[in-house]
Length: 322
Ligand code: NDP
Image (cartoon, rainbow, N blue to C red; front, side, top):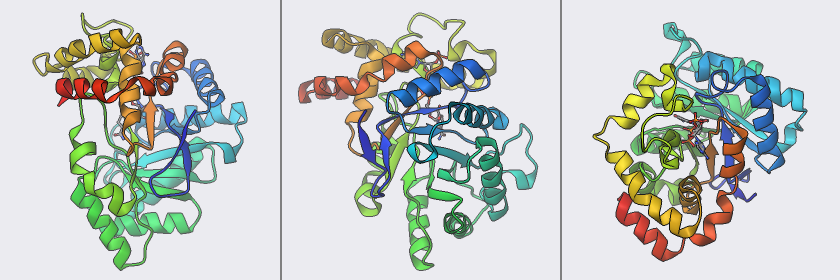
């Protein structure tokens, strides 16, 4: 495993990490979750990603249960939560968003579900147009000073909103955000590469990137239809299927065009796609989302493929994906 600093912080996280999104408590039950976390940890993964909204809090409960059962030393791994969407299917007005109240309540609930005394990382899962940025920054600062959160960050915030968070933190002597959690993969490059370009140097922003395989599209498994046992084959994930596949096949066309490059290099397309994300120096960690041990074992090999990504290979990939 390789360890990278989370932006300009001193925290060293594994370049490959593991998350629970639509898998934990749905495709992945307790025994499989235990095997997956154990496999990840044994291979050097030290960051496990979660959110209040994943399976309405159940994904955090499952992760907390499994980590406690595995007796992972608390000082050897990092765990996150995210606040914004709420932890129920129909949240009341005070049970979602980034108000001081919900940021506090959600933090305490996540600590309880994950069975930890502090969150290593706590993300604002989206920007909240109904809450002043200062209120949210102040709430995060308080949680950091109380020792309940070590590093706080944002997820999918527009660059100007992240700038605003830094400005109000500076003006009020509050702790600024340390990291952002954006989607980044061969089919989705713009925000990480262009919109955020000025933030890395200026604010030392780290990134914990999500959906590095675009929910599995970048394995090629959807090229000839939707397998029943896949993520997009799950009836609950119709919204995700719609978002990812209803673009006149443009994404799948790109996936098919990338396949020969992986073939030439003698590696699966998934490994090439993950290595490509790792190649970006602004990526602190690539969050993997495997639903099976075989997938996770395969994906953990991505770092070994980095030397194959020569300038020539990178420019061929760029021609297909830009
Ligand atoms: P990926 O894009 O890597 O998709 C993971 C899925 O792809 C797996 O569950 C599996 O689906 C399939 N897959 C993975 N590896 C392979 C393989 N080798 N062969 C075949 N199929 C494979 O990651 P996620 O979309 O899960 O995102 C990773 C994490 O990022 C999440 O768990 C979550 O923690 C975080 N996230 C954050 C968001 C945010 O807004 N901040 C949003 C979304 C995710 P299957 O077996 O079901 O087909």
